[in-house]
Image (cartoon, rainbow, N blue to C red; front, side, top):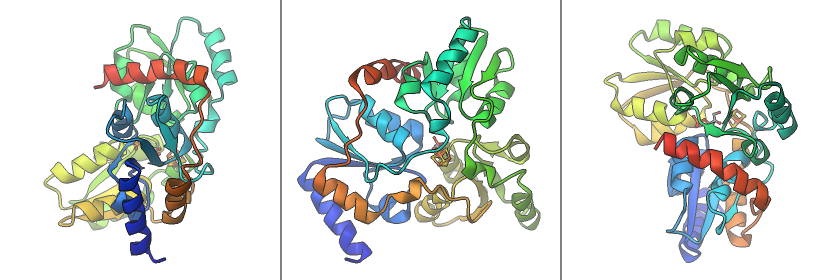
Length: 308
Ligand code: 13P
Ligand code: SF4
């Protein structure tokens, strides 16, 4: 089958089964083209909250995103096209590390980035995404906050909420894809060549790169900024799938990746073939143990209430 045939078959089967296909901004264009909804982690959480308009959810994104959709829909079957789409950063904060940190800092609030496994969320007071980190932390009563796993997001939050003491857990948490940008020297070369271009950078990037950006935003924030800004050219400091979405949906403007090969291999494990198979077989099903899901739902819903 060619791309068009795969897409037609998926669309047909999606209707037959009343399935909802959710896709993250980093998905390949062929998947974006057949998705019912594309967004950043927060937008996907919101869309996945209490889904009533579908019998089945096909989640084209990485493990922690699909788990979150499942936690928010305990009665629904959530299927991920491949269980190998695992975010390495999400695995950097196991429950045991979080428990130790909580014992060492009993006075602290516990905030976990949504890029964590369900077992870590179950230990948290509240979750956050790159779109609402500062907003969530600023609303906490506690002065001390344990926050992880992304070290660069901790740095980003500490600058925006200076009255809180934010302790990173673990010490080394990072996204290898966003590390590719380093201090942003290549992006600055592009900026020299195109001085009117806006430089938009994700908060998982290194602090030195964030400092050079015109705006530091979630992927959903980058999308909105590109639509609303008067600029005609943008340098995009995040995973290249984002550039694909921008080029497809905002045709009048120019989008340059800050690095061509900043590709998330976990996101790219999802393709048309395994998406069709997931829809046909309704597996692999995302399984979160009931008690873990019950406990993890509390900090996720708290986030959605604090950041509607
Ligand atoms: P966003 O929530 O900004 O889409 O980020 C998700 C992610 O995994 C970034 O690497
Ligand atoms: Fe995880 Fe980084 Fe991929 Fe985002 S880009 S899913 S943080 S590995």
